[in-house]
Image 1 (cartoon, rainbow, N blue to C red):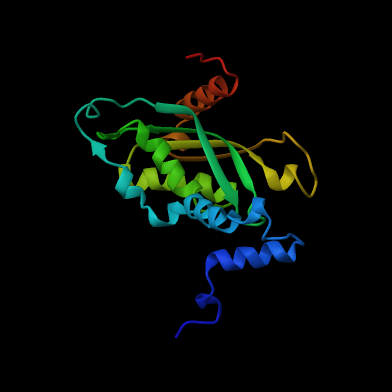
Image 2 (cartoon, helix red, strand yellow):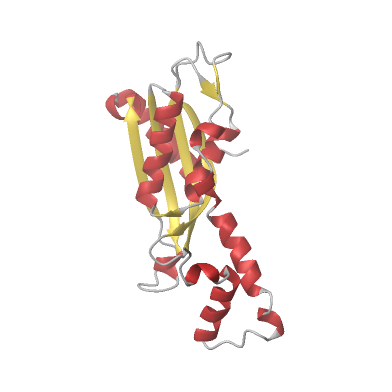
Length: 198
């Protein structure tokens, strides 16, 4: 049996919320806002319906002899903080050392989007990206660094605009082998300083 709220449409709930803010939901600028809001949030949270294994198609052809760090820099990432439903955004740097298999280059961005398009905290997001790569690609090691700005810090609360939060997760040889770790961090520093120009 459905609860009382389950019978109410998502759009109706948003209309009621706007009314409680003191808005006139019948004015022209807000008439279609509930529908737009619902569509937007279904997209923002579409990662719940996606699985990492669906995007991490592996290739042995081309990866069988490659055993050095493969690094992808400045991947745009946008997510929503689960505490205030505010945006946080920035870039991710993702690397792995193959163990006989590689993934298509676009798959690292797709993997990040799967987890970013859920209600998140930055720390969990960083771990989920790294752990999914370790589980489904089974590389020798993984490194993930996220550099993000959070609207919950910038537009409310402490209101410190421009603050960047950096999180990192290292797995396997990227964590355990000093040379591999140093190479990964050097790549992150190069990308962060904008030295690589395309």
